[in-house]
Length: 272
Image (tube, rainbow, N blue to C red; front, side, top):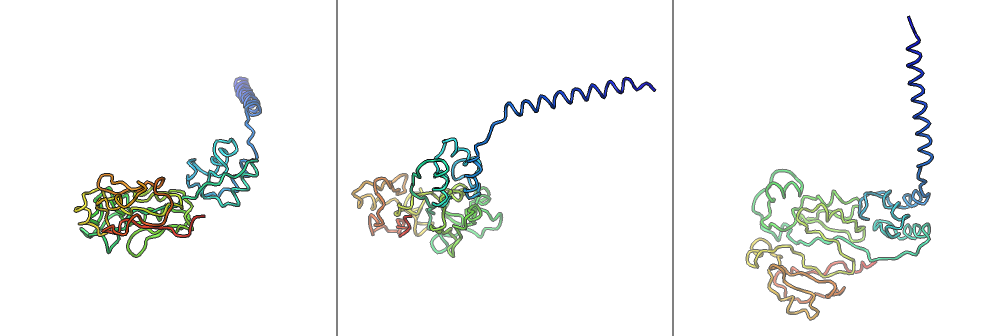
């Protein structure tokens, strides 16, 4: 048997392999990007939740963006104040402290307030209900109460209360916004802790129709608008809304004559 062709083939393949190995080694050395060691250090200081509250895919991406100067040292709202100061020290910058955000549930349509239109049996998630039938409540704007927001929260800051509505623990809330993102009815909003007065309703139906389905629905009567000199309240498509820039951070309601008590002051003593 002639082994010459076999030897040539082996040598040729070996030579080609060696050539590409050398080229890859040279390319790796030439093109290698040295990672700033601060990236790993900052990532260690971040909570590791990968919640996306910073607007980036995860904590590693956030750390990299901080080192590059694309985001502030306080970009992670979940970080403790101590960690933020440590990150700022690593970056050689001052901490620019912003106001903490918390989740606010804009609905009071619990079991005792809202009209039940049916007994729902089916997919036990808010998203599933919203896609299939709209759920068992007569209000088409309110909370569905199946706890998608609770599942989304990684910080145990929200739970379903006795009335079947989510309740936010404002002390634990990190402002990550995960609960607001998953709510199919968009009844959870993120607000600075200094915002205290809210219209806890999202119903845009005419007053009479809104009141038929929920005792605490806003009926667009304009009493709040007439009794507020700041111009911080307005009626938009049969629903009262608050302009917090105008109304400020007061805890006093614009009026005590709201017929359905849709306007509520929340979050006392938590401006931290």
